Image (cartoon, rainbow, N blue to C red; front, side):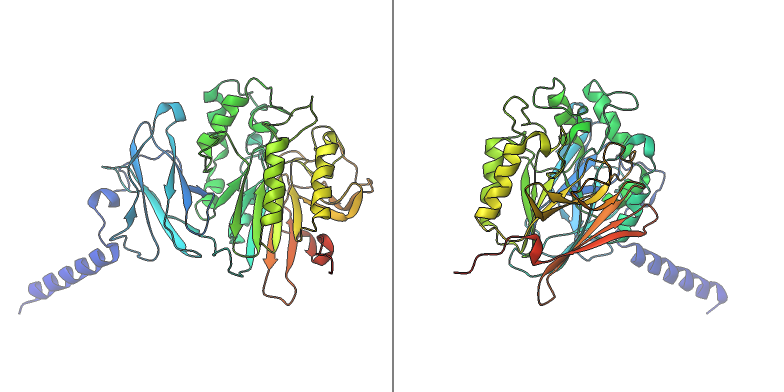
Length: 433
């Protein structure tokens, strides 16, 4: 055989290896100059042990579907959702459910607009089954003002490899840096805040998100005239599971194995200064019934504003409702209740009014101005930090003789600011018979 034949064999072999590495990838998918039809990167939220909700934004009106799988690097036979059509009335965004997932499993997913190049590969992990005793790590924080971009602190949160991210509200500042007045104005605020660092976090980490005032206007209540459009924009830009009974409902709960149940409170759209109700009777009853029925070792009440803050616009303006919640938890001996909050632009461990044995853990801001209204000298503070942005990391340890929660605060250089280990003293144990 001559040299040219051997050269041909070598070329064929190399081509075969290249095709094998590429798997079943179409020429369109390989072409980096071909559009994928997507305007923004991935996001997934409200993940359970068997479901997830994928968020997508397309370039104009498009049909789009999600391809997803567990462990095939070549994407030969992914599962597919039905096609979803995006439209201008939702700013070409969509929320696409993934169902019948396996618990505690890493899924890879990507978006596909027919006739376009496939979107980037993203990932998430489903929750363990509710009875599974698995340790859990999550990151937490709120307050991201667009003038503070890039949100570099998000990179450290991503590198922590959390199971999920709890976003405490003020995900945009609609009332700052060119006030949002119309629905397109609100949409624009969300687009501005999805910088590259933010999208990298969302591409690997499920989100549980709740709003606060700046998603509509500073300190807004239920009568604010722009509440409906601010709420629509919030639903349009976050992977939030809608309630069939009430499409406007934002409060919800999620379990992450035996160790964790999150209760996300909506402290805004039911807020009524006339009746001194922040969350309203229906949501309060949902919370107290859910806490009493929960089998989770630790039950996290996630409030966008602090229970322990005595000022207006915080729970201090609604003391009767706050005290009723705290009193019921104590009287019913509900164990493992931990309070998490944001909004006030400082990090803190703060004692509750009337019962200083109960503490609240306050985080943030992630990317916004620091506190100038609260003094570290207030006696309610066990820890107070007001000089740098920060995020929280919460680790639920179920692998020790006594389960405990490790709460940590980190600054923008990822330096540890403070740590608290929460054991039996934080919650109300059952009384002995």
